[in-house]
Length: 376
Image (tube, rainbow, N blue to C red; front, side):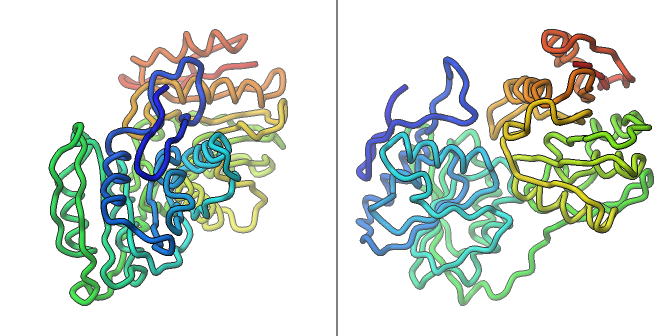
């Protein structure tokens, strides 16, 4: 894999989660462009730089020791990538302060480097949270590969930060540079979190900005809900990739003695799930955590896993994450335990699960989705 070379550092970087013969590198031309642009400004060692949505630590690790750098984002895997890449390059794993997107930032910041996220609602919420956190003369510099840079990103920067100008394209990447104009902006009320109600079960769901399908129930989950397992007794159940927690909450309402663990790699998803659980189920015992799936779960410690697996990581589409979740579920389940999933018919999950589990059956199907049960 090529190294990332910029005026700040030369780094050897890996992606998260790691996979053998990784076809993709852990940085791109937009990371290089952001770092080269900042280097041209010759920041001093006491310049406070906030990095938002650093995919695997390329930006923050490069800036360590050159400026006062802080990293924030909504991905547990991204933070894990930063820690591993710091170690890989001879630094302490915690050398860069990291703030989950669900927590408040502590400015003021002189420069903000932003990797434009796939979900523009996350970008909007992050820009809103910069209100009152920017030093006089601050700049917010957003970077992306041109094919992943929507016009709306510039509109959001203009609305919440100040006047924007776009850079020239370099290696198919572009920057949007906004000069902070605090006096013109005034106080802003965030439109997040959003809420929607379900009829069955009769619950209201709160969704922070980066939650998948925050405006309404996604059709895969809608297909899954009527077929969640019943009569689980005191089973230990995990909602893997829990999002706003709807699967676990619906299941818990039907299974009052079961013990639930809700896991997602999005900090905002975990925050949403915890708040929704309390609203629907009060102080009923639950574990809710941001994590790399079930990677930290004790082997053979679960009886049931519920999962609506993702088919992309940021802008990269594929079934790598789903396959990894299936493997994690198998490891965490007791013998005789079961993984329940919903998936698009065309993804062929039945044959993939059959390679890991001793029995796979179709619980239900719609024209677009299948609900499968895989028994260990």
